[in-house]
Each structure stands twice: as structure tokens, then as C-alpha cells.
Amino acid sequence: MKVGMLPGMKTSIANFMDITSRKRAEAALVESERRLSTCWAISREWRIAAGRMPSEPWSLSAKGARD
Image 1 (cartoon, rainbow, N blue to C red):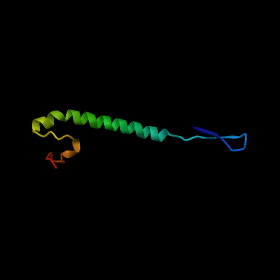
Image 2 (cartoon, rainbow, N blue to C red):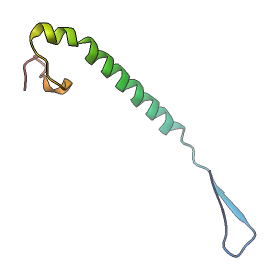
Image 3 (tube, rainbow, N blue to C red):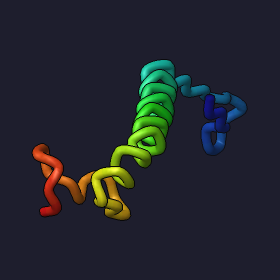
């Protein structure tokens, strides 16, 4: 909420903005990042067994070979 006085008047004006959708999107992003991090951590054992330890998850192609 923003509140301000109109210049030269004894009147104030208020502005409200609904941020519900932004907060929901932020929460969804945090959850998505948590799931990606969990999957990446769990896949570490597979990558060690396969002899592939790239530093980033996107450095493996769909077939598991390095790009």
C-alpha cells in the first residue's frame, strides 16, 4: 500500500496492489528449485557409478553423454 498527500491539498491518496499471484509464483519457484536440488543430489550416486561427474545438471544430454 502506498499513501501520499496531494500537493497543496489536505487530501491523501492511497494505492493498493494485490500481490497474491506474485507470492504464489515465488513460492512455486522456491519449491521447484528445492525439487531440482533434491533430484540433483540423489542422482550423484548414479553419476559416480557411471563415471560422469559434471558440475552442472544441464551438462548431460538426454542419453547421459556429455555435450
